[in-house]
Amino acid sequence: AMPLGPAPDGSGQRIFFEETSLVGRVGAIGFQECKDRAFARLKHLGVSFRPDSIADEEFCYIPMGGPLPVPGQRVVAFGGAAAMVHPATGYQLCRMMAASSAVAASLAVSLAAPGGCRPDAAAAAAYDAMWSPSNQAQRDFAVFGGEFLMTLDVKALRGWFDGFFRLPEPLWAGFLAGWPLLPGNEGHESWWARLTFGVQLLVKLPPLVALKLAGGIVQYTLSYGPPLMRSVTPFFGEPPKYTWDAPLPSDDVGDPGAKREARAMMKGGSEQPH
Image (tube, rainbow, N blue to C red; front, side, top):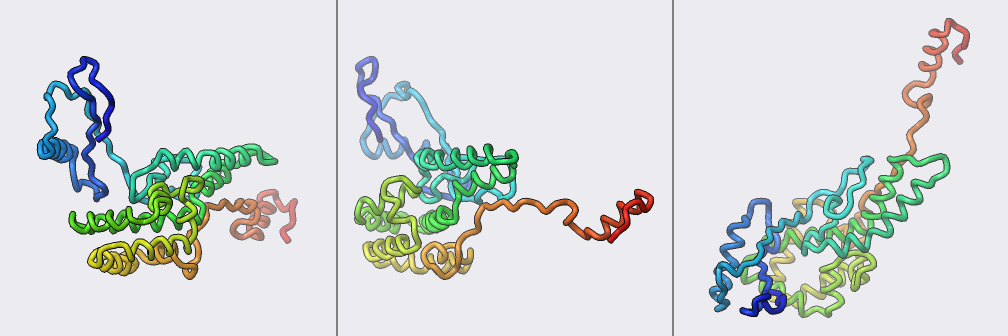
């Protein structure tokens, strides 16, 4: 709930109420269910309002998680289209703004490259500025967080957030934002920092939630492979980079000797194969 000040006609206060689903699979909850829950919650809390006093309704869907942009494409997506939404919190605007300078700089360098701009190289440079191996590893850690939250019931969620918000504020705030240059990110941008954060969180959780977390780590790793372990240890390498390799000259692709022979034969033997 967020107060917006007195109503224009002086009849009461304007307040923005939000009912949301923290995280869920596609189709897990619909807009109508959220709306019904909002009115039920207001009634339970004793908040009265006139039906004709509702000034506006907002329906917002925030895609969280999902695949990163496909390497090798020339189209440069940005923001939500480039999977920059935090996969556990839904935050996106501050992350997009923090990334914009690095992406713009990479494109400027590519566009001014000697010999002309290569669109493939420019796109790869932009994506590497967004999704460097370090940023991908930090995202892998957050993706697990979102997946784990979906396994908890209401009681466990309350225990989870009780422990989470008993961490030092720079730690929990840094996780919520989770992008280079944003406050608190130094507590999450290396594998050691993420491992330390995880251990500190584990000891603040209720025992049953901590046990669920340990089991969730094992189950997630068995299901999805090394991304989570790679994000908190140095033993599984780095996520792949968005790199662009210049193509080979056409004469060097395939069988160069056969190509030379064919050209010579088509010229009537004026060029001898060698």
